[in-house]
Length: 130
Image 1: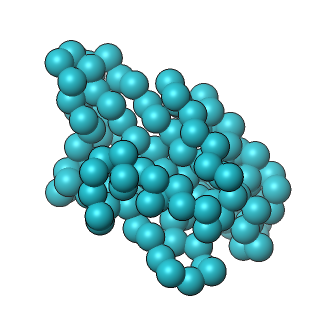
Image 2 (image 1 turned 120 degrees about the vertical axis):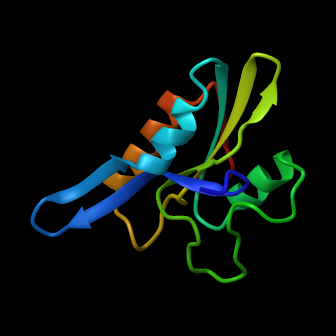
């Protein structure tokens, strides 16, 4: 796994028979497990679709690339993503979360609520990018 790229942390799987499931990915778990000796500070970014959440996350990291951004009205981010190599500051690790946009025509309000809830629960600092 290349650590200098985003990693899917929470995958959203929709099954017509079993409903929508939110699954912690092995790659995302590996990123978090690698920080077991650090104090983790999580900056979570959520908000409506197409409002610049991924761009903001990239800007925080002083990058022009990173979390996927697009120039169309179609959503780019699916699920909740984490940057593969957190910013290490002594014994602390700064972790960035980028989320799927809320209010998408491709998801219902219940999925939006869970995305928002998971992000709020994981975050030390939460940014609602409106």
